[in-house]
Image 1 (cartoon, rainbow, N blue to C red):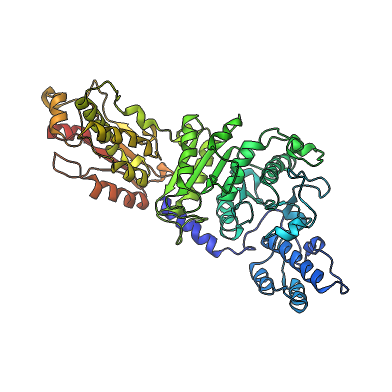
Image 2: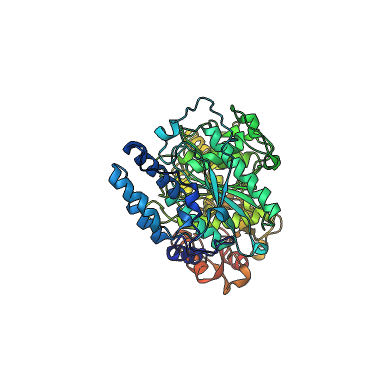
Length: 567
């Protein structure tokens, strides 16, 4: 079911042009060309150098506004981008006439700061430095937000502030926010794209931009009656995720930009609004050595009101190590912060909306997961926090155990985890499984340490039904095998094993075509789930069924005991 949903969303995005969605506050006149008011003035008496640079600055302004124009007209304008000499610069300037606006700047854009009252944490930034060093901006650039509001605010599911990556020196909107915005807009969210400051501005300036944008969503949301203000979320990729992390560490809650700025800044009434987030969606963006100041990741704990986290990262990310995402997820678990982690096997850095050559296996599912997570948090559903509750079901392993007892206990815990392996990311279970050696104390200790490699996607509490109470489990004729017999004869289970079911419910279980219990083969001495139930359940889930996998009793239990488990 989820895959069908994601494929549908992907087709919607493919069909959309920048102008293909109807947004609240859309310009009423197609010839509304107020963007011209934001361009630098050109004059014939300029030197060639000044003329070419001024045309380049105007091109950058239009590039930052590109979602306000029809896609075809922006492409036509973009083709004329050559400013290497006066003749080409004049052609580029003339190409402004090709632009067809669909929304006015006045309707679609919030500028975050007044040009004469913008906080800066680097008092040494010199006039001309942005012109000389920025890849996208220019002296006089004011960061801003582009708004995409739903027509019917009464049905809005939440408000998402999107921040693309590119480290802190670029904004990689084309492959990230610009592609993902339509997906979440179609899901029913108000979406806001942050055009933050980038280098040579410093990191703290960028964090203040995100803080200000969150405050503006709440401030104007209250004034203009936006829906979904109980869910103000951020979503960042790569350096955009780094911006989220830095904002959480330095520019949260009621902290004023005046406290962070080294230049004179006069706070206004917007600065009195909370800048806390309800959910942070961090997509391959949990910092690296080029994106300070997130060492250690636990530095965010200075914030007393951290949001819930949806975290998505590829196992093969070559820029931001997957270990960073795992560390953030572990930090959430250790501090009872609601979090969901989706580790994408084979995905590299920069998969944006998911899929494609960079996306690995299943990355296209992350938008649907993030949507479900945000709504669960909004509705107070603690189940989405996916805690490491499997550890509650492990047997205690003690250093004072004999070698034989130690090895035996680790083996039992291994078997327990193997039976619930579908609750973990495939990559983390595969890595854990490589350490399954318990023939000696040394190897058993390594196996025991490997439990920390497991990344739990679903909690036992959410996903599992135990069929019987440990003290009230029926057996044929009351003849239950002894613990010693089970430990000795079963190659899958152990004396403490309780048969159970793993649930795979549709997003809307009431819409299911039916409910199927899957029971793998292996006679009555094995459960051949790997080749049977584990491969088959996704097929019937996608066909529209709720699916339940039965982990029945096997030998030395009697076959009638298995029948009762199914019953």
